[in-house]
Image (cartoon, rainbow over all chains, first blue to last red; front, side, top):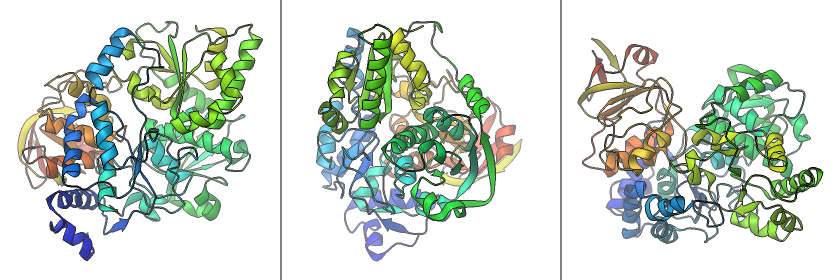
Length: 424
Length: 147
């Protein structure tokens, strides 16, 4: 890799041993992918995947402490993924004991480290940092050093920023140095589509199901999706952004997609159209039958497959303001129609602290509270990812949560039905 | 015996018994319980990986196409190495992905006592040939002997 004088000096240890090791890490990481140079990070803020003081990750906190001790904080402020604990979310005595005293016993200590390294603010814990209410929204063309697969794929695809699927630790090392190696999604070539996905469904496809189908087919490749624009009213409005948030998270977790183009909708597809499709791209046709095939392929790993759901999580990734409002209205109407006043399954909606604050100013907030739904900033994945929680029959319409935990996937309509009429 | 040659990601020599995953290794799902609940054998906890689920990963020559899943993948591998619960080596049939690459580089640069050779680009034939329990010898030039 060809380094500038400044970068070479850092690598040679002129700025201290710790920064030299950070630079060596980034250089070796980039060289594995053919990077020939480092490029300056241009976004206002970074975003880190590690938001949890998990006892098992003690070596990570040790490494971050080396950065703090060497007085090498992040050159950018950053947001981080959601907190793993919220007392508002239902849990058993045993879960509480294990979460606080065992699993997440490092939480307070770790949050202090994040503050020293450059956390944006105390509310900057969410996987949807790019939402207006949070304030970490990169501009088109910005170079990022983010991690969190759902945020990276959103930033690349919907915002047109440029970011690789970085691992945790690599994310903050980029912003400690101020540079990232140039490869993959940071290059024009790396943003070309190797798949054309043709949508031929008879109704608007479920975002989480469509994303799952695309992710499982294309894995880490870039898809160029045609035929979806008509279901998104041909414009990148708040509804479309919410749809693409959920679609993208499913492509990234059910496969390893870091960038997609939606014809007529996402910024690069609008500008460049089919010139974004690489020569020899393969085609994947998605119709109603294909979506049903994908849905039917999901394993149910509950011990008792007929168990009555005990908890419902919605919001992985965190819900948007528009989503909270529309779900509140749907639940209210559904409960009235069925002669109910409260949801029939304990239900948690998750959203960023910023979105929750904004929602609480809206008239729908009182309706949601009345329905019994709990509104939380928690990370459902961190709540579920342990042997105690995985025994609970949890339902969700998040394909990311389904993939990483024992939660069972249902479509939005099926979830609504269970919430207002009662579980099976 | 069959010999394969790949690209050296993290240099080293080792000999170990093969453990093969034909699907991508979900690093977080595979290692989380091992790291969290004191399992020194690093038993794979990923129920979605029938090849590895319930098997000891520590000390094995882990043969796989790539890693998948959460972007915590690299730091999870780093923690496994730091806690001495890592495989003897990781042998990828495909070019390495960004998450596994991060883990390989982090352990090499930040853990001077860690020793986990990593070789990638060994090809589809490598993964078709190697079976659980075979003896694997890794050399620092990227040569992998399977017998």
